[in-house]
Length: 404
Image 1: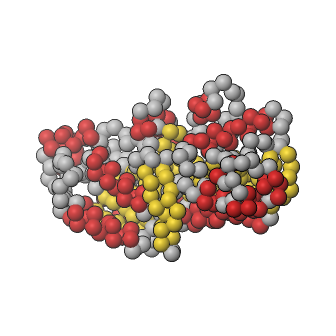
Image 2 (image 1 turned 60 degrees about the vertical axis):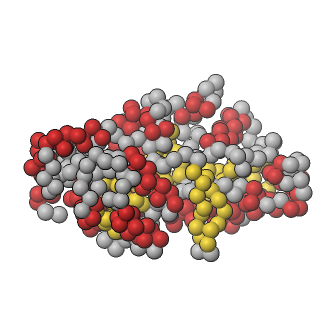
Image 3 (image 1 turned 90 degrees about the horizontal axis):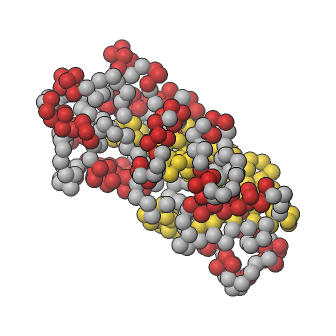
C-alpha cells in the first residue's frame, strides 16, 4: 500500500476482512460478493484494490470504470451494464473466484436489486463496503479527486442517494461455504438417524412429518425447503422499516463487526413437525450484536435468556417460514426452564453423536456430545424475501430452497 493510500485508509478504518486474521481465513473459505459503494473520488477504488491484493489467489475485481460507465443519476434498465453483467455472470458460472469485488457507486436501488438477485442465484453472501475517508461526502473535495471530472452540481445530485445507510432485510452470521456444506451433511445424517429410531417411529402420530406410513417416512424430503445460505439471523430490519433498525445498524459494536469473521458454536440439533434447526450458543462478543428484545419479538409474554432464540434454520416443511425455527427453539427453552428436560430415548453416533430427547407434540432434540463449530461472516441479507432458488450441486439442481 502506498503512503498516500495509508493516509487515506488508516488502519483503524479498514474493514475486518483486510486486517483480522480469523476473518481473512474465513473469507478464503466463503463465497462473497463485495459491493464497494460511494461517490466518485471517495476512495472506493483504493479499497477495492487493497481487497483484491489481500485475496489475490481467490478474488476477481470488476470495476465499472473499466466499462466506461460514467456515474450518473439514471435508470439502470438501460444497456450501460450489459457487458459488465455478462462478465460478472461468466465469473459466477465458471467459478473464477470465490471473492468477487464490484467497484461502482451503487447508488441506484434498481441496479442493486439486480446484483442481489445474481448473488442469490449463485449462492454468494453480500458485503457492502463504503470508504471511511474524511472527504467521502464532501462534494467540493470530490470535484477535484474524481477522475471523471464530474462537476460540483453532478456530485451534489448523486450525494442524496448515498448519504443514507443501505439497510438489509436482516443482519446475521453467514456460514463459510466449507462449513455450510458440512452442516448440511450433518443435518441429513441427523434426519436419517432420527427417522430410523424405533422410539421416533413409535411416537409418530398419523400425518405427522408428512407421512401416514411410518415405514415410508422420508424426513429429508419433508424438510426439503432450506435457506439459500445457512445463517444465524441477529436482527430483522426489513430494509429499515422495522422500528429500531437504524439505531441497531449505527451501534458501534455492529459497525465494527460488519464483514468480520466469527466462529459459531452449535450445541444441539432439533426437529419439530414444522422445522429442523441447530441451536447456537452465542459468546459474549456475539451477544453484543444480539438485540435485547429478540426473544420478546416472538414471545412477548415470556422472560427468556438473551440469545436463546439464536439458531440456524436447516430446513422447513412446505409453506412454513424460516422464522418459525426460532419460535420452535424457544418452545424447547420454555419447557427446559419449567424443569422438563424431555424423555431420554437413546443416543446417536457419528458426526451427530449425542443424547436424543423427546418433548411431546413431535418435538425432538439432540444434545450434541461435542459442539459443532462453524465459521461465519457477519453481514446482511439485502435481497428479496421469499425468493425461491434452486440449489446447484455437482450433479445438477438439487432440492428447492427458499430465502426468508
